[in-house]
Image 1 (cartoon, rainbow, N blue to C red):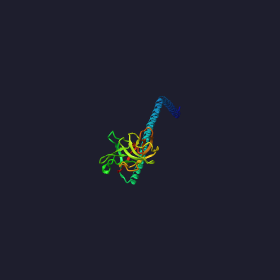
Image 2: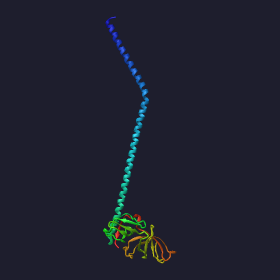
Image 3: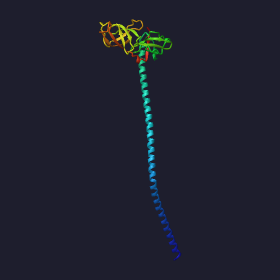
Image 4: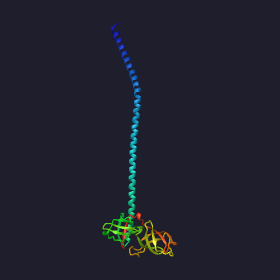
Amino acid sequence: MSKGTKRLLLLISFFLLTFILLNYQYKGHTASSNLLKIFTYPYNRVNNFSSSLFRKIGDYHAAVEENRRLKQEISNLMIERQQFNEILHENKRLRELLDIKGHNANYVASARVIGRGYDRMLHTLIIDKGSLQGIKKDMAVITPKGLAGKIYSVREHYSEFLVLTDPNFSVAVRLQNSRHEGILSGIGEKYCILKYIPPELAVEKNESVVTSGLDGIMPIGIPVGTVNYLEKEGTGFFQYIQVIPFASPQEIEEVIILKR
């Protein structure tokens, strides 16, 4: 065999061996890769599940936080709306007080109710004006709706007024339609009693009651309330008449004081 043939055989053998080794390595790598996939499959599944779970938990917390924020915003908007409505109501009341001030020659001062009286035997309200603003004892206290009471005690910077439903309160009044006169007294209830109206005098239910000015304290013609209930028979010398005040003591916030 010549040297050239030997060299050719060696070259062919080398290429064959190289091809066999490459083919073996490829098949071995594919087999090992498939085996690795078998062993790593559970881990990959657990990893994917954990990642998905953590994403959902994160989304849940984000949704909870956004829900809390939205609730807080709604709460703030409701508070702002209530404050706005309160300002509108206060503005309306103050306009009504200014209207009374401009049309009443007996005007002394406007005041705001700042508390309840300390004497538990009396139903009084404290206002933020006193003797320095010209307020004196027994002056009339009114609201845009009508009579609220009269000044009971006075200090320099504040005063107390007795509400008209208190048992110690009384005022001379007349029925607006029939012009019958009597005395209105508080009894500690939500209504007052109109006294000294004889049974023979006609009184209508829902008839308005106003101050008569005959007591020398209250100005004439201040609205007081309406007749809510009346009895003529079996009541003695006078009719039993209940009057519901126009100005409920529980609703009084701002008042005007009128001189005697």
